[in-house]
Amino acid sequence: MSALVARNVVICGRVQGVFFRDGMRREAMRHGVSGWVRNRPDGTVQAHLEGPPDAVAAVVLWARTGPPGAEVEDLRVTVVEPEGEERFFVR
Image (tube, rainbow, N blue to C red):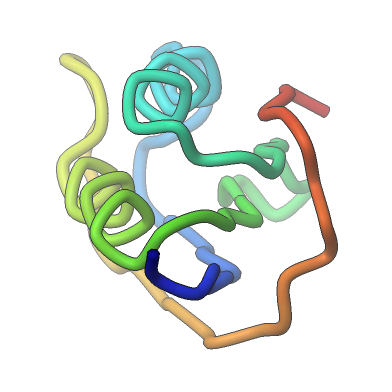
């Protein structure tokens, strides 16, 4: 069994008002990733993802494009420590 990893992801572009958070929640649940996603006042979307390395990588890959209607201009990924999240939720 692989150790859990965690990533903090900030997505820039036209990412609010296009169901980005709900799409990420669905994608995370599909891959068994826990954590959270939220809109930030600066217009970006931020997520904390944790789970098996391949599963977290799949959600990060999805975030590079996002849902239909999103226009991702930049994606910043930071390695962080897992927080012990047990489910994925929208903040």
